[in-house]
Amino acid sequence: MHVLRPVEAITTADEQFEAYKLANEAFAEAVLACYEDGDIVWVHDYHLMLLPHLLRSKKPDMKIGFFFHTPFPSFEIYRMLPARHDLLQGVLAANLIGFHTHDYSRHFQKSCMRILGAKGEYEALVVKRPDGRSFTARLGTFPIGIDPNKFLKTLEQANMASIVAEYKREFKGRKVLLGIDRLDYIKGIQHKLYAFEQLLAKYPALRSEVVFVQIAVPSRTDVVEYQKLKSTTHELVGRVNGIYGGVGHAPIHYLDQSIPFDRMCALYRVADAMVITSVRDGMNLVAYEFIACQAKTENVSGAPGTLILSEFAGAAQSLGDAPLLVNPWSVSEVCEALHQALTMPLAERVRRQEHMNKYVCTQTAQRWARDYIKGLLTATQTPLSWLKEVHTADDDIAAATAKATAEKDTGSAKAVTISFKYGSKDSPVASRDVFVRQSSVLNNLQI
Image 1: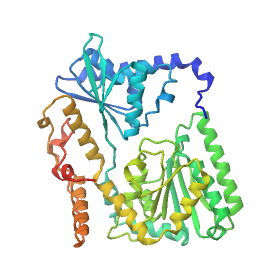
Image 2: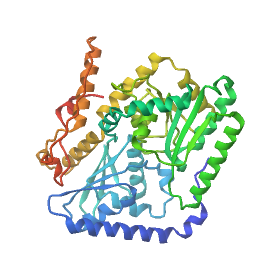
Image 3: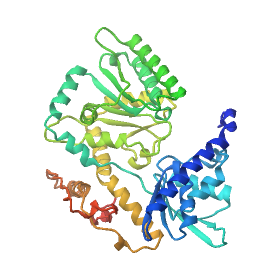
């Protein structure tokens, strides 16, 4: 069991890293051109790992945040990078380094300790500056979310009932397994299709009762490896449909295209199970989108579906045991999860959905941004009054979710009507400082 890089990669590594440095230097110039003392700079993802150091070298007192949206690899894998020192030193110039999960933070900390000799502390790394002084970079875990209001609002549109009815007619009463992914190696599309093939072989009675809808949004179409992935995936779909399909019925409906947002929400709503088999994923917000669209609405009815989620997606650490967690590398395990999802009792599906919906409606994208900026202000010893109090739509959703949960726990559950409010164009969020203070309801809510 070894992880090996193609030997050809070493011949172009230096040239590629020079291009990477030029890109980071271009961003540094752009930031410095508009930077004013007291501003906060928030740098995002692995594309700009050198940027914090470039900025710090010009503005030693700059408040800099950095966030990794992708998984940070274990030390055993990261150590293979030729530019491993420069990349870590670049990020460690940030005051606060954020990750989606504790695992990613732990991997980063270990790599810095082993490669740079940095001193590890609780959620922090201490490094020596060129002038001999110590600098502490704080580490934090901030799981990102979505804006559930966007999906709930779409489900309330007048045309949604007709779109949902259209899909139900098209699927002719069959149960629907759904996958929505970029066509990318890390998304594990073929993994789930192999598992579905095994499901049809092992449970013949399901062949006429289930359909797998896979949306594969084109990605990097000019890259040869992705063209090969597309070709082999088409071959797999064709084989399964050829063996288990019939006149007027194809077990797999595979689309090489993106679809309109309202139709995507409708598919989320009619799906009996969402299947996510990423082999590695920073978070995978498709899982949260599916959960948001399973919520009850006035004009779209139906029982909730089940989420099948790869244990290698960051969302798996946030949702606990509510989804059916699977190892995408085990075809038989994913196959049995598919069967379990299709045969799961309604009461269990409802219980799982309620747990996941509570999380998605409270750990929103807005809350993620608030929590991170609040942490960055603390790390830079900046008064929290720097932030502006802004009421957003997700505050209404979080409050309603908390109220409904509390009433249910005390045995006095009541119907909750959620109304969405939007700030006026004069709202302070319209300024360039879009960071907002965590509202009291989110501060006090325990997930």
